[in-house]
Image (cartoon, rainbow, N blue to C red; front, top):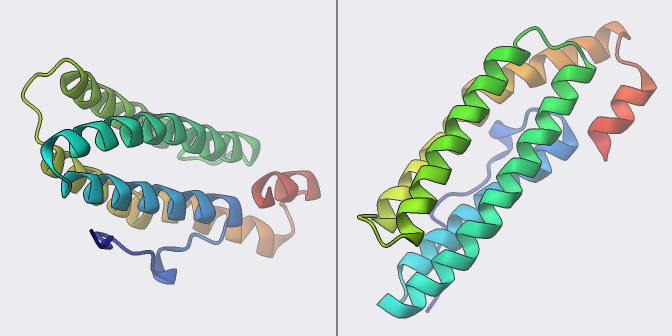
Length: 153
């Protein structure tokens, strides 16, 4: 079966922090993998979805950790609110994953749409503010070389 792009990266979503942009691209790839898993036959879809969702949960935790480290290191004023949004999203994802793994009512396509919509709106409206803050720090020369190195790796 041909892989479809359910969602595609567009440079307008860049927040100009290379490590975060690369991680956002990976989250989009995972969303597409989950979407394509939903298009397989029942047993194949279930197994592929199970494997991909576990990888996605792990990667989301890693990604949030990266963003939170950057926000903390740069004294981002919206850190507490941003971290709260991350926590709420992680809880929602884990609730859905638990329902899926326990065989409770779970609609994979609905979950993939939720994931796509959340990731894209989070990048556009929440992460973009963090990016703007970092860009201003760079322009003003306040961003230390150590902090910049953290964001580039």
